Image 1 (spheres, helix red, strand yellow):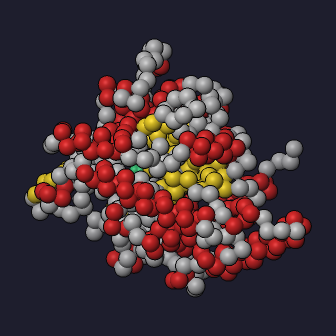
Image 2: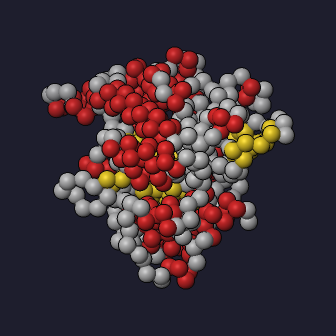
Image 3: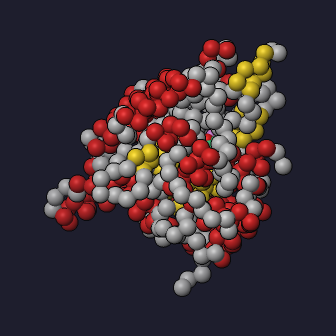
Length: 472
Ligand code: PEP
Ligand code: CO
């Protein structure tokens, strides 16, 4: 077992489950081992930045957070489906109008396909407006004999391979907050102001995809929805307001605990503490140890929260984590995002599903088919094969069906840009194609066509399984 896998689950022992739980506060995580934190050379300037972050207005409100929790509770009951998707890592340079609107276009198109195909509302959660910190497998990177700290996301340091760029700079936390605010402001303005209007799905067309292999199927779905919208409005005798806007929620991996703490606030007329930097923070696989600082921080906030679950996690460890993070079994509180890899899911997932089902714990199961399917080509390029991504999604639906549980969502890394970072898909991108438009600074993302194809895959698989399910 490597260090990451150990961090992902093995710190939790059955003995520690019965240990008394100490009082929580926004700073109590500081008494626990915190993995993946940058080392800042100047403690005073970090403190000054955190004080400023603590003073600035937050990004989201407790009302929005609680509404999302309610919607996630409905997803747990099979009444909604979660689409959580966006960049692996946002960058300050990509905080620009077309990149943000193209991302929204893909998410809107995918959610349209899912709503139509699954016949249920979709909860749209972006990996955006704060996804600026990355966990890394190695603390350092070596190039041509020189070793420097790894790039940990724009909230920490820069991608350039130089001593200056790789130094952890606390000022970046403030820049991250500002860029998150700019991103979220634009997203809110677009989605409230008519961009997401179901009467105008042509607003979401991306210029470069006219000849997409999936265009015809997508156009057919749009036409059917157009008919349904007209029918409903004819019946109602007036425009239906909810057809002209779409709700988006934000999420990011809450990795840098000092910064998360600075955005953890109390609000009038609500008990407890909310992380007001995002609606749905998640704990990454590398920091999900029950004895670690991340679990301690997350257990005390009132947001709905998610945890990545890798193939090394044992059933008793998962139950321990559930006890810690959601002791009162609050509906909508806990989402478990499994990311096993196409070759491991069939063996790794069933014991976890059975354990949670037998313990009768309420969770929302979501499949991340991206992070267990990374590979590095002989030329050093990191990629993922579309066939493996699709296979993990399909297997997920089947494994849940076989174990009496429900897959309630997908978690994807994608972009609205015409990138060539993942191999395969309807256009059969090959290794040469990867050199054409590889832009990711971290993990390879799905492009628009591959994303739409996955949304169609979800619909086809759900329909196939429900056709095969016994009636009654
Ligand atoms: C991620 O979601 O970008 C990530 C690093 O995932 P995981 O924690 O599952 O490896
Ligand atoms: Co990633």
